[in-house]
Image (cartoon, rainbow, N blue to C red; front, side):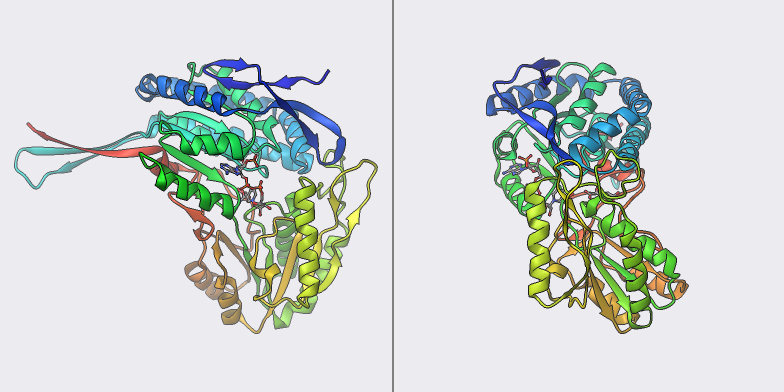
Length: 481
Ligand SMILES: NC(=O)C1=CN([C@@H]2O[C@H](COP(=O)(O)OP(=O)(O)OC[C@H]3O[C@@H](n4cnc5c(N)ncnc54)[C@H](OP(=O)(O)O)[C@@H]3O)[C@@H](O)[C@H]2O)C=CC1
Ligand SMILES: O=C(O)CCC(=O)C(=O)O
């Protein structure tokens, strides 16, 4: 019998009224596990537990928070192969990518273990004689977290770890498509010594559990990663709530990779192949627009096409697979819809884009490379979130930069060049939260801020010490001695 994975509320695993199968996108006949489908009552119980746990946890000794996070980090690292396999089975990224993501989660936990000890304040002279001012940071309260399917352990981890380090309590709702990795993370953190009610997990649908979280008056802040449309709805709900909720949104991207005539061709091809197609292109940092200057355009397209021909698309767990399946039927439909739109708009489907049959039934799609794309076309403006990239030709650097910035998004932007002048100019003038020089637009470090501008992000940055802006609130105290 398939195991039923239960919600974790007030320090207990709670038997659900309903559960749903978590399917493997590499083989849809394989059920990874049955996972609870939470209800509004479950969410209410989880928020009540988090509220009750908050006073003690927010005043707890930082050594305790350090110990819990470090112990959890050690277990995540020790089990990275097993957890990486679970992640690859539920989400479809390749096993090395899955293991790499789990290792990143372990590193995030140990980074924030240290942050629990480093949280500090400031002493400031008052303009009034005899008065001293302290500026301190305190935990915000109960944090609601709503996470997407494309990074099933890293994204929950980079929300949970800072929230705990700075003394908040949590209710998390992972994406219904991939609850398994978050369940494993919550189980590990619980056994690492978290007091009852500090971390609560309610799996299930966004329209039910997520919506109830937005409406609950005892949830003080919401951290969300996912689509722009859901993000907008969440921001509106947080502002409309009484009291208003603090909100942080990480949403889509339409990230440019500029390739200049003077680029090292091999570096540029590797950046494009990795940034656009690895992890099946299902990254908000994916390079979906390849903006290539005239002098290198044809050589680059030929070399990238050769590279794509060598990429194996197959079961995520098979050794030798470079690109796993698309996450589910609905995302596959979206990818195919945009491939059709690109053709209808007059772009040339230069290579790929075909559905592939493999040994098992799964959502396999050949990477698709469009050429002759204008930046006004829908495939250059809307986030597809699949292995589909658009090559846009530019006359030179100035035009390439203008095209790169001509987008509603602003998450990551990359340039491949051997010129210090252009690299420096691009770092200063790219309208994005993250800039990469001779590196893929996707794939970031775990100890520095992550986030974007324009339609990509809203609210304070995630990750690194900058995460404290969201997970703490500032207090200014005046004392007359
Ligand atoms: N920037 C990023 O990292 C990501 C971007 N996307 C983009 O979004 C598209 C659609 O993916 P999808 O998974 O549907 O993204 P969504 O934005 O719908 O889902 C993200 C999370 O929000 C939850 N959610 C959905 N509706 C609500 C609601 N009304 N109230 C509260 N929470 C809600 C989801 O729950 P549930 O589990 O029920 O879906 C999930 O946990 C992709 O094709 C891609 O373009 C998707 C994932 C990540
Ligand atoms: O590129 C990365 O490393 C992170 C990408 C990401 O967080 C996302 O796609 O949601």
